Amino acid sequence: METEEPRPKKMQSTGTQIECPMFVMTPEMAKRAKEYADKLTADKKKKADQYIVERDERLWAIGQENCAACYEQKLVEVKKIAGKVEQDAVKEAQKIVEKFQGTPEVGASGSAPESAALEAERSGDQELTSQSK
Image 1 (tube, rainbow, N blue to C red):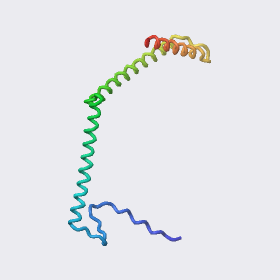
Image 2: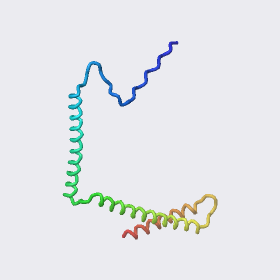
Image 3: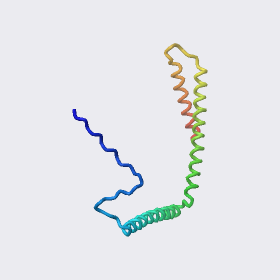
Image 4: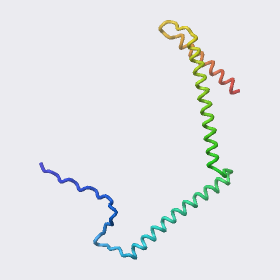
């Protein structure tokens, strides 16, 4: 069997500039390359700022002047509603548990608890529909 030579490791950036023997960058070329890169960076920043201005104008046109505050208000409202729903669910679950505790268990089949659960669900549905009206 032939032993394979291990692959050379990938070169990691050491901060040194790699030079190609066929191409020599002159200081003038380096200056132009830097100016070009700076121009691209400035254009990118300018477009990002322009996008933000246009976005704010569109939001203002539809009546959302302070969008961040609007989102904060919506989040507060959603948290309140979620908390209320959670409390209601806990109360309903407690009512169902209390109904189960009050029913005598009949035999090993468990048919009585199942029928009690169905009755509790029906009464809970009726309560919800009467509350929403």
